[in-house]
Image (cartoon, rainbow, N blue to C red; front, side, top):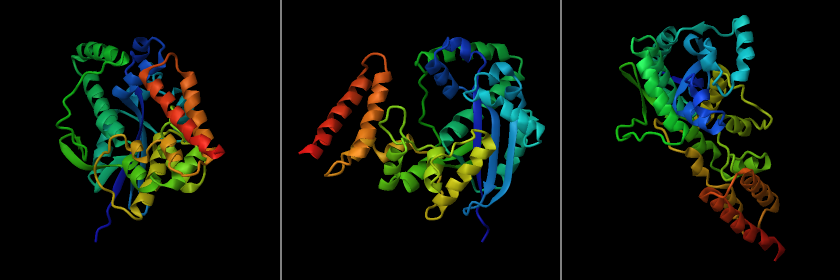
Length: 331
């Protein structure tokens, strides 16, 4: 029987060059634009089997984005530019036009049974398609008309007013690209379902402060997943495309040991693990070390916020319930 092959992709992205201007120094506004309008500057992928054996590994920097300071400077990891320049000097990567990269990408796609990433929603439904659109417009006669439209759209996005789109035709289990379709899996959803949704992982998250910003949810990133699987809690992702794709390939192999690599994207898979405060309160007798860590994480987030929004009020209510539960220890 022919061995199944999988492509694992990672992208590092910037955004449109006017994002800094539209966000006016507000990091949240810039983040909203960057998530909605990502431009790939670094793309890497592996081709592997279920055991995690890697047969192909490739990485490229995109000439139209990496080599344009106005775009690259909008990247979250823009400070990594010297790392990339060092990689170029050593011949570890190369800069190519998007069209040349995609020619190789499509050629490799034709050899695999399915393709995916850790957060396929971002890579395959946003980053790659929007970069494809941007490059096509960049080399067209109507670029400036398109850019002006994008400025208007991004101004709405920056102010948290994204346009509503009809998602009734959303294809969560395929990657449609240049007239062809490819089965699409999501390692984030598969990992949360098969590797992370257990008491051991949640306890390790609390012990190692692996919380989301609010303290309410457990981290479920590729980095925290790899830390848990390898018991290396000091591990830090490089956030360069090929290195991250290799880490995610290992995660795929750990899932595939016992489970099928099913197609499909799960929305907000981190929610499968429940919340940190609910996890603490599931015990008949409080684990005070865990309770105190969770309480402090949520409290610190509340203290960092300006004002008292409905969301913050909800967090305060969580702390009140957790506090009442913790008093059981003294009864």
